[in-house]
Image 1 (cartoon, one colour):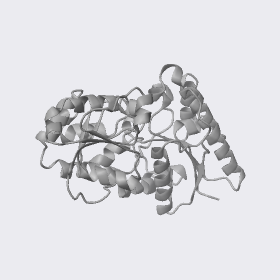
Image 2 (cartoon, rainbow, N blue to C red):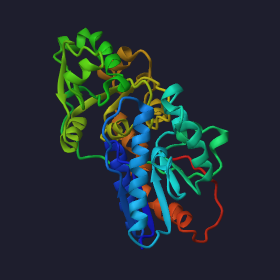
Image 3 (tube, rainbow, N blue to C red):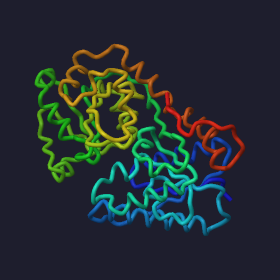
Length: 347
């Protein structure tokens, strides 16, 4: 019998990383854990249908795991989608609720069912305080413990020879068109031979999203391995993004962990790096992305990298593992503990 069963949706790279991190943290704390991974369903046309297909895949994975041996002492569903059709109640870990990222017809069936599941869950495990805020009062029946996804520095920066880097998987949501428009205004950067490197997407994907990447001084690098991508982050003077909505922002936290200046628009959603970026240099958080980029490239603050690394210390692996051992497992496994607040602000 495992102490904890994690029902892993795994529909994105970020979710897969989060589930693996949580499993490793639980094991490091001395408990046993099992990952039940949902098998990816075939693609469908709408977000509502996509969520249904993934929810059914998560239910199948959970049922198979529960039928294969003694029942676990606790279950964690990774994402609200994984919990929508659960066979048995459990804790729910999520970056953002459908109440926030599935507006209108995109969440017509998910939002009411999500409210019922979150009220019935014994524990909520949002990635950030912002995710708690998006729930709304009618979905906050269960206690909550903020449990972020960990980020670490990927190495020592040998030199900042890349002017600006952006990560644009799902280029329309990430606002690549806005980043390109801002870069096009920086004629002095192009005259100096500086470049904007775009990773995580292709020209074909961008064309399908209606985004023209034929902008002077832009180099499209396509999808990268994790190691190659983080090597680019270590070389970047600035990491630029203009998301239309941000459910967490792992790439932005990774950029800060590697000492790059985060240049971003103030996007809606539970954007964990946004308050950190404002504290580090408010000039670099603006709807005037071109002006913010100009400040980062021409008037950088000398101590930005050192301060950024310190600012993301609460998100390091050691900090998250401590929270799992001291706060999460006693709640999941019903061990005696002294009362404490239901949510805690990191930092």
